[in-house]
Length: 373
Image (cartoon, rainbow, N blue to C red; front, side, top):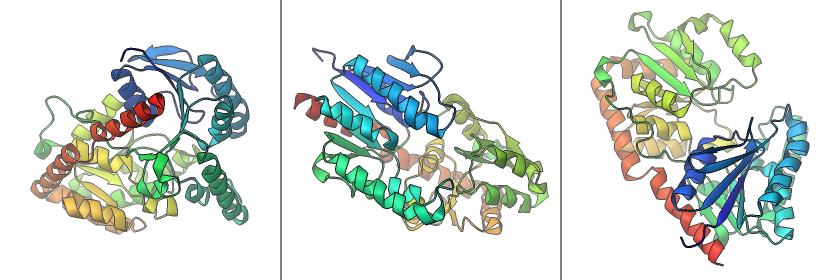
């Protein structure tokens, strides 16, 4: 590029090194020659892999995040005076609108289906959830008319926004990111079932922990968890259960540590509950397990059945049934040849179809169109 266009990504919710925002989108833009800054809650300003981290103070709670952090993000955004602003949180919609009023080019990145997500929020009284969800959808749809571009994580979310300005960027893995040199032979691995990601009730953690305790002890299956509990009290509750003795909890892991964990695992677990927000989602962890070459045990949702069934990379179960989950894990542990073949089929599908390299091209085309315009 003759001139380095300045791009600023904004988030008040996600950490500075979020996989989708920092590793995939920002680093892709740096590689293409853009001057990229990321305004995010962080301990300090920094420059990592060519991305300039512009830190704002970390909030101590939801109210502070919505009010103070959003204000800090906006002030930092104005100081950057960028050619294009790309924000990632519904909380920043009004910040996006204020930037538009100042004549800026603005892109809204929609990670989740906000109206459906609101319907499962425990901190909103059940009576008000539908009202809040409808209001959120009206707000999103109205503001999206004024933004220059909309990026969504799934087709279902994209259907709610103007097609002429909407681009779908699936959150697929980066090719080779979860590949370990001198990978451990599948047949020699310990009987480990892995779960990585946010650890919550709605993502099936209670059923997963109970399921491992139902597998015959002669197999020695261990459940290895990597991620953060939400709420934190959930960890103490599960630690007090009889089933916890089969669990190894590693806490949050960086990308290298995740790759090493999956290189030792025999099974990957993605057992989300069938909420409206999850039924038509593309879970990042599903594709990361596939990228690492391990078979999956996943919730039997129609969309997931179509993906996993067509590839043959795992077993589908009722996420509310610990015995069904346990039986699926046990079968994969007791049939290592078939399980390894499933893992290879999943990995092959990642290289052919489900990878970030293909998605990155769509992001770059959108930016080129908006910046030239």
